[in-house]
Image 1 (tube, rainbow, N blue to C red):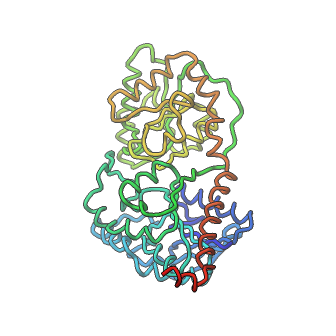
Image 2 (cartoon, helix red, strand yellow):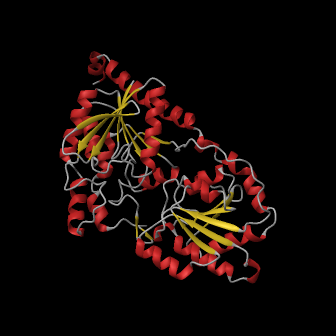
Image 3 (tube, rainbow, N blue to C red):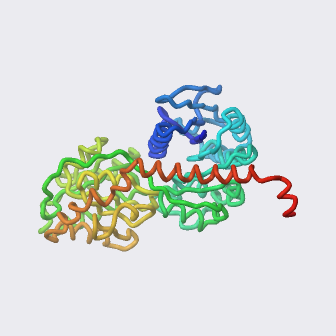
Length: 416
């Protein structure tokens, strides 16, 4: 079987977890005998072909105003024009079609399509090749791929995103399958009418090769809480700091601490530090996850936006660290309330503080969650399980194609 993978970036260009997961999938299917090639975008002005760990990688020049992976800030009008082109990029469709014809895959697996646009689906359909779209985020609903603005979620799509994603539901009918990395991210698209008419819908959770840390004896009650990730408003960091400050106002909670690992917008980070930093609240900057997890009793994931999955929760649980998390997006698919941690609704005032207080006060609650943490996320650390599910889907879709092509044309005429 020959599979062509299409994604906005590929190592050494990495924008987030999608590239990490995709490289793991590509390496895994190649080890099982599938011939794989990747098509991505690059900064060069010409098409290039290189190899990454033995995988042929085609990097196409982006036919837009600028390459999406550079960090240069641009005027809002230019950014809007870029997104307008990206809503339906015919030039990238033609470039991708040439790559499909050259490789002649049995199946195309689409991942993050920033730069390629939904036109990529037409390139596969016109070539007569079955295709599956894997959803890592909300790109097909939102130009920013996140469905939030500032600290606010976009419960209703804004006018600009509605215009920029016009016709996306109809275009998605060209696909043979759609996969969500969580049930939450798939359902959000289907409810919005995108991929609703795609016959084969599936959830295949991401997996990372994480090993459990050396067993340690958990404290009877939580004394050190931690945060790991971007220091951004949409991540709920401000809400966490306010809840912790309120908790610390109780004299009985004088011994609790909060450690925050990560960086964010300089001004926002500076404002947080000016208001909250002190002996009990420490900003560590950018550190390795293991360094933070070895120092804390509980990880807090206070996301206000709907995280597509939130693998940081899996990292913590594999380290034997229970999690307090907002019940947003795909997070409840890894954090099980009252089993390996606590879930709360960030829209309810005081809910986060109450969760912090429970783990700081209730004897035996922390050890009980810790004892279940590693086993509870076994699914998300089993790469072979993830590969099994993807390959089974590939075989299903390519078998359908063979069945269609093997039909005797005379029988088709008889049916008519």
